[in-house]
Image (cartoon, rainbow, N blue to C red; front, side):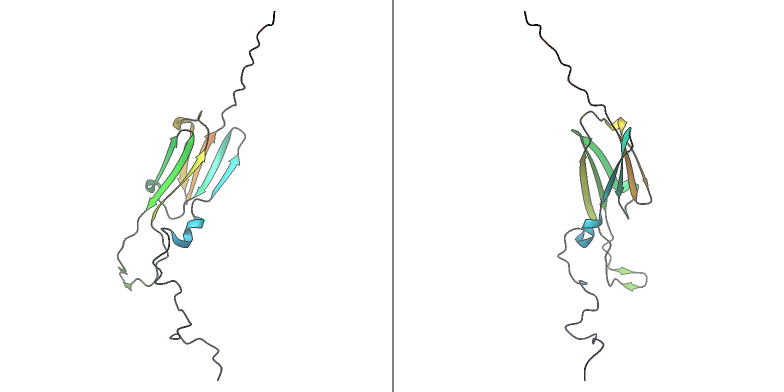
Length: 142
């Protein structure tokens, strides 16, 4: 007789795939979804929209060093394997730290940059600095 539904106790059928996998990188398969960024040219400034779902404002840090704007975020989860209703069966939420850097130019200062965080999206405004063209200095030929 042919089986149409898998037997839950078959070795070939996995009810909770990757349930016991503990060798994933820090953020596992969620890593590719973190810190996705859109950058818009708003004529007088650039607007950066960075996805940071699940993070809180106090878990983030923005630094400016040598023309590089670095955004970092760190999150921790309780290591308790039980909750009010029983044991944890599957955990897909992530914990750890991540960062990403963007070159914004050496003429930009911390006071020029404005940031806000709402609904899991970090918005950063970086002003455009006018490019200074080198002054041509000619020497008269006698």
